[in-house]
Image 1 (cartoon, helix red, strand yellow):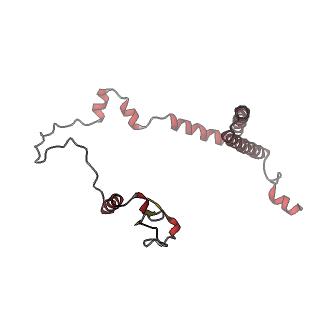
Image 2 (spheres, helix red, strand yellow):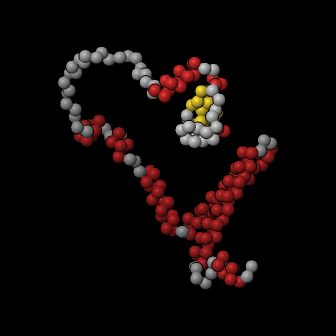
Length: 188
């Protein structure tokens, strides 16, 4: 590499404070440790050998320890990041208003929640309530597909994987709906 390329790649230490260089080194270390953990986790998922899995899991545990140590040092060095993390912890610990209301005593809840007025008795409707579960009404396309399925053997129905168009018998060279090639048709 020539000198011009090096100046573009590396930081100029004269323009950056030592504290900022330290933070960048820690962040780079964290990034590399997290990449290493990800790599070893993928290797663990792919291997079938139990001894290899145990060894990789030990390495992962050790790398996670390195991540924790680097994060602790970074938090000590970067007060702004530490403040942001503390604010985030407070937000997580803070209870949402609905949870606070649920934890109030019944007397306090009455003060917050308006009392309900007794409602008028319901008038009986002309249609008696049904105890049966409602059933779905199939669309005309579904009815036609079901009808075709009963009329023919299942091997005689082909469906376009691109648009869902169904064809009786042999698959056409092109889908009449979307124009997809005949290879897109599959048995339905």
